[in-house]
Length: 251
Image (cartoon, rainbow, N blue to C red; front, top):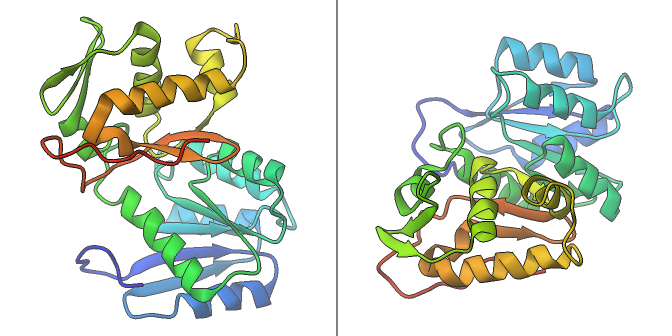
């Protein structure tokens, strides 16, 4: 896995795991030119090292000896200097609830152990690629391609107006405001419907399907995280003037 863009310094990865063998395994998988790894064995050490020198990527175990890795993830997301550090959870516990809790705490991806070296490198590359060059809230590409005029209640793709319903517009705006973060269906219901759930959480899927269809070439900006919810991502290869591309997999 080569870095996805030219860099004047190595890609710095902070590996946080209580087991030395697990840290060694991850470090070995990432042993390539252009990648520099640091290691921490507990949450406190992780937070101290990250504060001193924010990493380009944090690989985190949910089960740390001094505190929950989920709690460490939340603390990082609440720390202004660190809140945009991409976080990849690597864990031997990979049930649906483990994944949901990881994404809820602010994780960007989740990789179960055991894994292949190529799989870890691909996940790291994807997470870094998704973050590189992205502003605080709305992705650079999305800002240029998809625009929302909240005051006028309109959305446009590539300068062309998109006829979204009021709820579709609110849903798209919410996903864009959380760009790069996974938003659960229940969270969307609470934020868009005020907790008054539609007939089922699957109603969210129907709204997203409709939004994707109307976005056309920009439909890939809404990504499905199976069993969890949705994430608004940067799609630099989308062409607003080209043919419509299939969006992320619907769940």
